[in-house]
Amino acid sequence: MSRKVRIAFARIAQESNALSPVVSTLADFRRTHFLTGTELLDAVMPDGEEVKGFLKNAEISGFVKAALAHELDVEFVPLFSAWAVPGGPLAAEDHDWFRAELRKGLADAGPLDGVYLSVHGSMNVVGNPEPEADYFADVRSVIGDETPFAVTMDLHANLSSAKVDPLTILCAYQTNPHRDHAGTGARAGKLLLDTLAQLATPVHAWRSLPMVIGGGMTMDFLPPMLGIFRAMKRWERHPKVLSCSMFMSHLWLDQREIGWATYVITDDDPALAAEVAEDLADRCWDVRHSQPPTFPNAAEAIEKVRKMRLRRKLGTITMCDASDVVGAGAPGDSTHLLRAILADGQDMTWFFPMRDPEALAQLATQAVGSAVTLEIGGKLDPARSTPVPVSGTLVGFEETESFGQVATLDLGHVKMVVTEGANIAMKPEFYRDRGLRIWDADVCVVKSFFPFHLYFLPYARSSVYVTTTGTTDFDMWRDHEYARPTWPKDNPSSWRPADRDRRGVAG
Ligand SMILES: [Zn+2]
Image 1: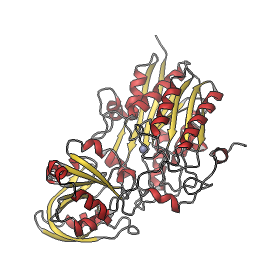
Image 2: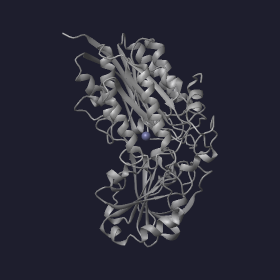
Image 3: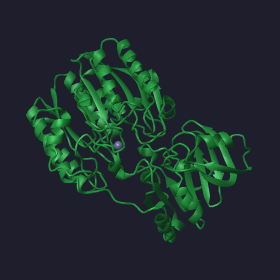
Image 4: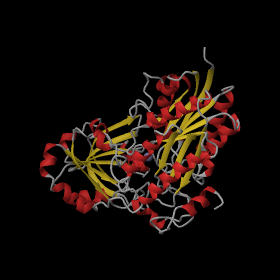
């Protein structure tokens, strides 16, 4: 009979947008996903649902599946799993709460052979740009330096020595938009178990690039990134290369040290790890000139959908406000697009999402069916947009698990769903559950960069991205202060000096 190994696991995951003034709290995690103990274990076992309403299988169930398939006999110690919709930096006291919970969970777990932690890798805490480094240090403080410690991250994570050094194994998504949450967990799981079974001796190398934008649309299945993802897969077929990760960073962090990175694990071959990490870094550097697309402004976008007569008739058009993408941490209360639609979109029916807790407090006192007049939006991030006066009918009001209070307003050509909590508005259900028929909409506004395409597939005949002004604008690098010359704000001739500097390596 094989040896039994005990592995504890936990998740603390949020992608933060440091430009958003809306502080995230534990309540945001509890609204999205928060499980502990046996409830968590049930959710990540093969017939469970890991993140209800979002993903049946994510990183932890992938990890568990790989561990169950391994020759070692595994005993799982589930700690907790917390995942919030992207948003502003987490409140400092809630970060402290997570740290205490993690340390206590590990200390109470008894002897452990390994630990697995699922994080985003670009979380910010108010006044602390590297909270995940604290979690990793906390894990090490309990389990010591020798116990294998595996972490998975989003490929929009921002790496640093403080994040990389404590880890035995780091694996990131290899798809964008992300479709391999479970596969990433499984890679980390197999590697951790192989390490415990002494089938592998993971050693790693990482490289960083003074570059925050590049790779065009950054999709894994489109050039130019397609070539890099293929190169990673080719390297992973090398018998000594155990895992390749590539990080396209995340623009909107309160941090001077931001940039793309590569990270490679080999089986006891540090020189090969360095060679592969450098090869991938060179490939990333080569695609820096390929910039993301620019989008039409609100007036141009409205005109664009106006011309899509047949497509509107056959279904709906999805419109992403690329400046206020809640899926990338924006507040979701921008009024720039709304103003344009109210003024110039009367010939079409629009479904529009808005986050406005203050308006809900006011609407809660009104009877459903009554006429209402109020100022909507522009309150959470008043520096970037201002409230808009609207009049119409309150057609629905409810308490929900995911979004808190939700009101539905009929403003004539705009049917608006107002939420208390953050909402990405990426699924048709968001509107359908409020009694709005997707087929009735000429345009459904969403606050998601990519995933909405998949969910709206049965309805959407086209999609339009629009740029207004907000916390998820791609050109935010113009105002950002970087630690060293960084592309595209500056034009360094090589990535190597900045890399050595950022990793603290003598050059
Ligand atoms: Zn991501």
